Amino acid sequence: MHAALRCVIVAVALVTGPIALAQTLTASFDDLSSPPANDTSQSLFFSNGGSLDYQGITWDSRFKVVGDAYRVDPFTPGPLYGQAHSGAYFVTSEFDDPLNDGLQITTTMRLTGAWFGRNAYYGFGAGADQVTIHALAGTQVMASVVFDLPDTDPGNPARLQFANTSVFSTLGGVTGYRIDRRALGSQNGHWVADDFSFVAASPVPEPAPAWMWLGSLALLAHRVRRRPEG
Image (cartoon, rainbow, N blue to C red; front, side):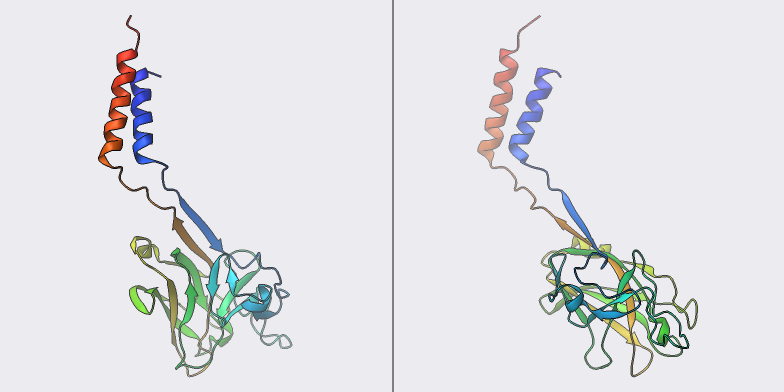
């Protein structure tokens, strides 16, 4: 490599420091320590060994982990509760009080998307046909994404669809998220979801002070001057 070019690279490295790299993770609910059998369901708290801290994120106690073979009525049998997007497990909202809505996710990471669908068992005129994902700073809503849950196969679980929340990636000061629903009935207005994707960026290097720029340029000049001729 040309000596002058090497010096430029060294000078830039000295000034800018390490490059910030985005760190990503997916909450798939397939690596929990105490998952339920795949034909049953269980709270996330117990599925995660008695903790709501999963993947470094704090989840609402009303999240419930569901196996992809679970049926509310196993004897008739009734339809499957839902489909996982990947693996054998997904989560559902677990509350019937229309006045106490909004499951919380507490994290400073940026939620870039998740896979959502209707609760198929209650697809006969109930369930939830829409969710709204809010990015929060404390209790303040910073931005929201509304996502419809179509009933593509009435009475049976439909494939989950991707809710793109990448708009949250540009926000600063995020402390968590809230997922609201639009319930079709007074009870059992549930949804199912899987594969929540999060991104966390490493700290961005601060601009170098003037003395570092001058020092780097002096180093470059010194190396170029010492370069043998010919």
